[in-house]
Image (cartoon, rainbow, N blue to C red; front, side, top):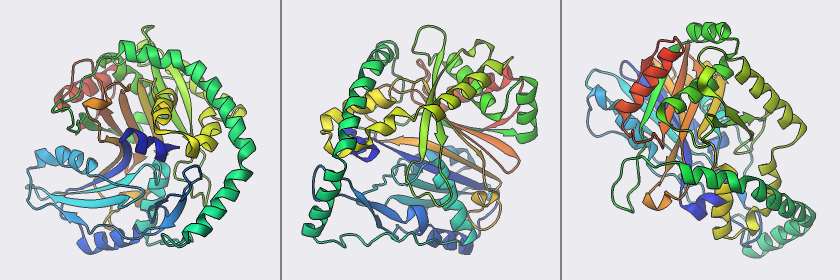
Length: 432
C-alpha cells in the first residue's frame, strides 16, 4: 500500500543515517561497507505484477551507485546543509537505485558519511539491522529472484491465482476501509482547517526543504531525568516532542493537546518485511510534560495494550492496495496518516556496529526520516514535525525535521526552539 501511495502522490519518505568522524574516514573500510550493503534488506527492489490488480514482489538488486565523494572540501558549518542535500537525492524502490552512499570532507579535517534508503524497502529498525550486517561483514542472501525472471504469461497466471485466493480477505478489507474512513474523516478535516503552512518557498514545481536539526544528550543525563520525572526513555522522548510542538505552535486540535503518531516495531528475527510496524496514536497534553511524565507513560502503556488486543487497523487494508485507483489512494493516504501533529519514532538501544561505517566508531551518528519531492502542489496535505530518537555511543540523539512551525521556517529558529525545549526539561545537549 505504501508503494502505491508514493506512486499516487509523487512523494516518498527515506531513512537516512549520517556518521560524523572528527578525522578522515578509513576509505578501505568504507568501501567494504558499501559492497556489503548490497546484500540483505537493502539488496532488493520492487517488481510489479503484469496484472494491475495483483500484488508486487521482491526481486534481487545488488547494484548501487558508486560512493559519491563530494567534489570540494566544505566549511564545517555546512555539514548539516550537506546532510540535507543528500536526503533529497532521489531513490526509487522499483527502478533503482533504492539507496545511495555519499561522503564529504570538511575544512577542519572531519568527515561525514550519509546513507539514504527508500522507506519502501526498509523501516528504521530494518535499516539499523542492514547497517550492522554491512559493518560486521555479514552478507545474508535472502533468496530473491533476479529481476524479470518470470515470463509475462507465467507471472500473470500465478498472480491471478493468488489474487483469487485472497478474495475473502479483500472483501473484509473493503468493510474495514469504509469504517476507518468514517472515523477519521472529521479528524483530517479539522487538521486541514487549522494548520498553516510554513516551509521555504520557491516555484510551484520546486521541491521544498524543511529545516532539520539533531540534538544530542548524554545518555546518563537523559535516563536520570526520565526517572526524576516518573517516566522512561520513551515517555521522555514523547514528552519532549509534545513540548517542542507546543512551543512551535504545531497543535491542530485546538484543545491544547498534541496528536502524536508512535510507531511500534513487531520485527522478529529473520523478518524480511519492509515495514514491520504498527502505529499507536496518542493525544498528549504538553502542559505538564516537562514536570511529570506519569500521564504520558500511562498513555503509552494503555495504547500498547490496546494495540496488542486490537491489530492496527491500517494493516487490514493491505489486501485493497493493488485494486485501489490513484485518486482513491491519495485520499486514503490522507485519511491513514494525515492528522497527527508529530511523528515520534523511537529506535531505542542501537547496536554499536551501526556507528561503524568505516569499521571504526564514529564520533556521532544519527538516523532520521526525510520526505522527498514535497512541492507547493502538496500543500493540501497535512504535515507537522517528524522526530526520530535512538541511543548509541553514550548519547541519545533526537533528529527533528519540521514541516510546520507556525511561521518559523529556518534552522536557526528550530535550534532556538530545541534549546528552549531542552531548558524546559532541565536538560543540556548539543544541537547541530
